[in-house]
Image (cartoon, rainbow, N blue to C red):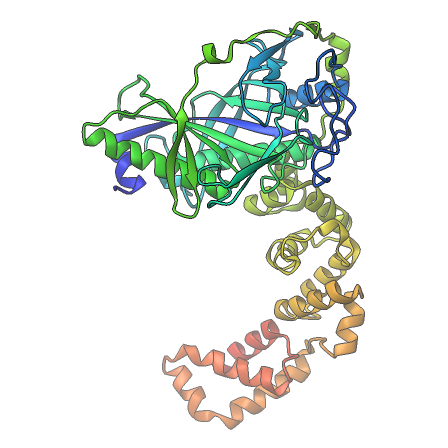
Length: 506
């Protein structure tokens, strides 16, 4: 099978995503007052409404409607004032009603879009656009709609392999999730590479976290993605037959699943085969896709207006009230960090993309004068030492990290020492100054004291001085190392290096 780079020489991928996001920050389900509680004992949060028992009538969750309108405004969608719910029929054990309450042709949010910048690894997957000098490029991804629906229950297949129904001894179903408010965002077929799909998902997750509508946990299934993929010869404008990859629950799985499917379709087409419209499953262990079922069509769902729910009429006042709740979005926050604090674009994007990290950074940088060092410590040291832990609950306070940045930029300690101090701060909660004092780590930056040490080293090593002056410039490291050894590692390496160079060149 060809690599994806080889495939892209002759073929263009056409990719559209369907992103499903549970509104986990709400307290109750979409059409009943059952609580939303991930991890609760199976089937303990159900009622006649979400179980679809005869005579039970749904009542819409107003907060859920506010959340989807907020999502639409944050992704530049038009908000449709009039829309309605439909019944989408399908027979599967995870949906006890045998239909899903969803929206029809007109959703709450229509015709949106996001600009996507792709840089670094994966930017070379796109060969038909103009790249900037740094290799990056920007493309626009249209959003067809964001509609509201209710989630299904959770199937648990016991026995077999990979937790799938094929080969399982028996299956269990938990209806706690059934009826949870779920928004589905459908993109236009504007994505062209697996890397673009991954970056789009990451950007969307950042936006939804920023507006506070979901925890967006891909591992727990509160955010998941289906991908529709087809191929066409480069230069053509028609669409090929598409396949759908279901429920990819990580950014890596999304990228790898799309990449494999693109390569698979190219191989089939180049061998004279036919691509069938079908739903496929990506197996992360083997990095292959396998057929699940033949793709359904809209007619199979027998959509018709939900008779138990009246059409929605959103007022201008309602929409503007929701608009007033929009926070600063990640792109705007990243631009502000670059302008206000002088951060590099990549660092600003990293911090702005997570609300908890952004709050921590802003609290630490407020009035410190060392924002760049604080960002560096957060991204390169703190993130690694937390190992996925919550920065909002760690023992290091923003003011303490700012104090640590002051010590590094003030040459009181080195960057290497800062890493050790930070580890102890996370363990004990002590301030950096106290740790530095207790461990005797304060750097020697006194020029007179360091000059005396360097002068003695120069006198003790005339052969190396002569070798340096004859062209072996790498000997600078020898003298700096010996000076650091003489100060028991507490000499300021920057100051020592300057003095050593001055003496050697003298």
